[in-house]
Image 1 (tube, rainbow, N blue to C red):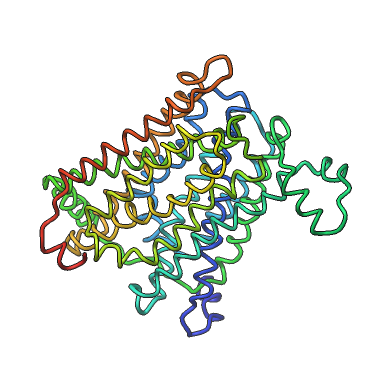
Image 2 (cartoon, rainbow, N blue to C red; image 1 turned 45 degrees about the vertical axis):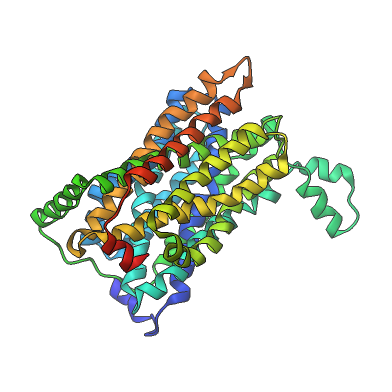
Length: 441
């Protein structure tokens, strides 16, 4: 069946189609992820129940790294697996719009994540399989994913709008109508009732990608590698943790992943709070500012690495989180600062997480490089998020909220402090060998 579809594909390199694939892939995640952290408490779910739902994604990420990704790679044509996974994932997203009960919501979210998360690596596999020069081609194609996340945010500037208030204002002309709509964001119960639109948009996009995947270039199943070879690669990669600077980087990666996910856990609630007062329809666009900055930062990352080196570049990325949480803690009523400080997200992501991936590629031997990336992905996509999603709802709703009033300042000091400590660990504990520094930085 896959061969029939692949015959229709042109022989030229399908950059545009791969770019669109990446755009749709990250559009799905970006459509529902930012607002779910503020949505779950409004459904009456306890902090523990929220953690069970939120941890579907990191658990699926960990499972994917060790099991489902390899299973999919070796048993199915990649574009077929991508299509089926997004069909199931899209239907589960639509299911989430139909329930506010805990158990159905939990099951549907786990189904979605268990099918969606493996497709992150599958889309990478499809892209790499159809490039002649991955070093120069992957960056621009992967940029489609960042653009997809940004584009996912902006429809909600018009979806999460109090249209009754807009009509009552009787705007004169299209420009005034748009301005009135953008200034009439939903709040409170109305915002809660409209938030399932995030799942509808994600579900529709997922089904669209399920169809689109059938027209992607045929990517056959990978040749199987023996299980013993796989275990050996993982073991050899893990052995490199005996080097203090690698172990230190692994620990800092865990800390930074926690801080990164703490931001997503708390941002929507904080932005909508009385102190900040960002309307519901602007929360996702404000959060997407970070991805806009990420595009620019990724462009200059190579130059920055050459000038600053591994350690200082990573420290700047980690300290970006400290700066953002410091602004949140001490200037909550300065809305313009709250909005603009999200620009540092691009610095945080590119200067730390992207740099970690580049460093692993430069330092680890080629035969264990993929497993080494997996070791760090366990921290970035799995364990760090798992810890944050388990602790952050409890901190927000139980520890730092009393009589309906949240002490955001004390809460934000926690990730700010962790970021500063992580930067100090890099400063004094991360000393990569000179040959790696000279060859890539």
